Image (cartoon, each protein chain N blue to C red):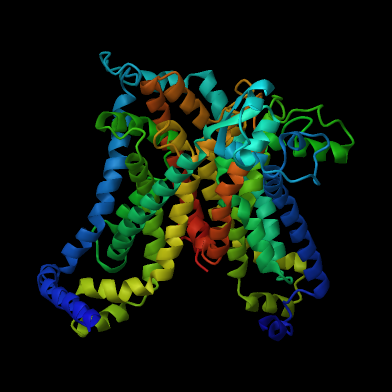
Length: 319
Length: 317
């Protein structure tokens, strides 16, 4: 009895409250509701993305240093941009970044497409194995990248041991992270290990989007498997492969966490990708104005390259 | 079994091809799992076993890594340790066998807790904002819709370090540096772009007729959204939430640059777990294992929606 009366009281209150709320919302036109729904997101992005971006643009024209907030701020014009674009160290960092981006994207695309092609043969248990292969890409690049420094230890590291075992060499004779020739490849290996499944997953979607009847028609025409691959499979999966390349390219251009933990840009500056250079300038030498200018240059570069690429992608798609 | 039906098709791969493809994929999967298995094994090794040569696959399991992860210890003389009473629990007895005593809890639990609060807080906010905006973009004629959607996406193209510079200054000015609220707002702003794009795809797939029917029955647009669209979008909202959660959980760049103690999450903390004479690998592995397990579970739960999530909804199955 008691319970019943309590619940009916709650209902009664609900009925009391509802009309006023309803009247307020019913009064809204669709247009007002649309803005009501969209504005909070836009406001948040303006506050936490756009305002800071504008601030960065302003700072890039000044000599501001975050560790000396009270020093007078002097307007420098485009001085930082000129000095960055003529700085050989910056170009060296861009070359390191290009090496990293190009090799990771090439390796991940070849391996990822190959894996997708094999998985698409739908062998028994392919679902479980696909999920297992996908695991590395979901994990924290920082936490897992950090653990790779252990695998790369000379002598005690598993990676060195396995390489030495198969080449019958000496596990302590090479240092993946300490050698200027090997360290650029050390970061490529970890990135490929982590992100090949990403490309695989997108390529798999591409392969599955090709309808069976096209292959059936090709069989009727007695096209060889080889011919079918080059004339059907690859062209029809191409937009998907290109999309995967776009996402990996942007992500690896921005790469920071894994490289920072594996090598911190070293030895020397052999693995100093652009984000590491930026972090060193901004948060170690506190050259805020200079690093802001470099940040803007990087952003414009990614944005420009991505836009050109998307145009090409759309052209391929519409073919 | 659909495969049995389709076996008559000329395009079905033969049994030999299937077995060959299967064994290559399994080989790759096994190789790719070795580093992860190694993390799990190292977590249960004693420090000596962890750095032995050749690397040990079989070893006597030890909880020393977990003990070292959760405690701080101080070195004492054997004479001093003799004067103490019996060891308090397993970790204390392990520590005493190494001439040390447990001095107190480590920072791992508070850091893990920060990760939880920041990840859940930012996920709830991002999904709430994202659902509203996605519905708005999906159903209403919004001026400059394409531009707004592209603007929302383009905020993801900034390198995180570039965003961190002004955020660092801004948070210092308004007093949000090294606070959980600051990190929640920052991760929300990053995740909301993903949430809008993903949820717009999910809501686009819900037929408009459902709401229109409800509105003919006297529902207002808002009621139709709450009572018809939201229940239909539950799967999409859940999948989006898990993606946001995983991003915030894994994030390192902002966390390492913008937090130092109070609001520090686990990713910047785990790599700096050190013992005497360098990194304490069993403790690092133990911390890593505990940190990764939830993500492994989520990945298995999410496998049907992974493709959508990683491509911002650009590819749907």
